Length: 578
Ligand code: ATP
Ligand code: MG
Figure 1 (cartoon, rainbow, N blue to C red):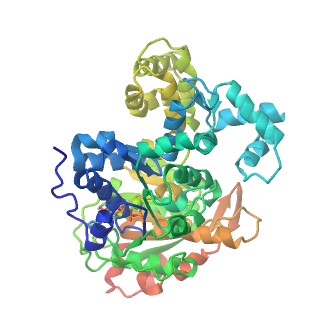
Figure 2 (cartoon, rainbow, N blue to C red):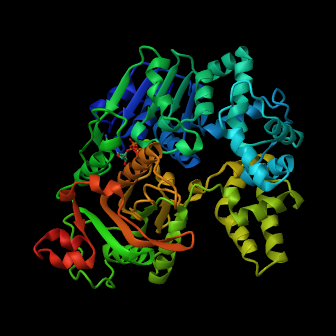
């Protein structure tokens, strides 16, 4: 019987192995970036199934994005073969959707209920509140923690109207299961028996509702593994609260906490810079993090100051050209020499930024320089015009299998307005990413539309495409790239502040963590750039360097703008590294 356990824990260091083999029961794994948390979590699940006789269908693994879920599933397949299929690997939203599909009647929904995306939710809210502006306020109140004893009639009316239309919104996906399970202890008990082993990655970013759902699904002494890094908590604006993480040991009395301290991702320069950068605001006292990867003589971190955001973007384009062995970079005229003999391709590179508006200048520079790129954001798939056009067309299109309907809808759109950009994106979208999803959904159109509403664009990215990735810092969570450009290291951009607004220490602490997340995505090379003057929301203003730069030790960095490079000794090998 059973899947082979040979080699299951190979490739783990002693700390990671101890975490993977730790006896069942509540366990907290708290460790810094690149220490193999996600790798260890995967092996721990595989080990439970293969070595401890845990039935795979008793395992629930929760990840932050669908992309992360797909990766986890793939790794489990490598380790467990066909058994991996029975493990439930999903996001919180996906989990909530699955529970609601089973319990729709209790929630006052039909079997075929739909998921309202942000626009649909706003439409309904605006209908209740009387205007779009008032609708937005209503939705903000819906998300705010309820004030004791105060019922919000408008929010109630909004919920009622959603239900009348057989819809749930994103907040409902987690909130409704929480309500159903807390109202009926037997139901909660049934789910606890279904999934006796629960694992959660990126635990530092769970919000109140997700936390409540976890507590219902796993008791104080349940077999729950929570993995995360408080210093990478970056979703406070969406209601996440790192306090949940910090409370784990109280929630599960006697639960051990395991720490991992070896960073396998990045070279020592990057690890040391990141540790120094987070130190002034670290939530992990006495954290140990050291680079153990096989990197000799790592290059310094490149610092670049540009005149404005366009110059910054063209610096990045030229640096990329140079890193990939191009010839158009004339200013620092020596061959690319890094002592690592590395071969880089576009897919190894990424550009990170704080706000998606910053991508405009980068895309323009890349277009001009012929650098291929793909942009990731944390936007919903359904927010893309092409996807919306397609989704609107689908119910009108005949056909049984969803894939056929998607094809027909794309064809209809293309036929109706052939020169229309929206139709063109709809057709392209259908070919690239919808069709595989549509096939998975078989004949279930409702499920397809729900999945579409749930999907974040970050999940749709093709990891095999040989293109530079452009992504916001929030979307970069959990990912790694050999070369990282972090753009816009300016006060007001990173840390971000709305123009004209004052400083907020708590918000700034979170921005520092975002900076930390950005630095720690890099494996071999890191560039931090800034502009002296930047146009934001249509008006240009002088931009001061980010205060976070000051925390990066000078001896780990190296200016790479032509001006300052010219002043430095030519024998400094680092000069040639751009
Ligand atoms: P983050 O906090 O950014 O999510 P993480 O702690 O989840 O990071 P992983 O993504 O699991 O880290 O691992 C980082 C990198 O290090 C991956 O490329 C992984 O394959 C590699 N790695 C982890 N552990 C080991 C090990 N014991 N030996 C070799 N490589 C390892
Ligand atoms: Mg991870």
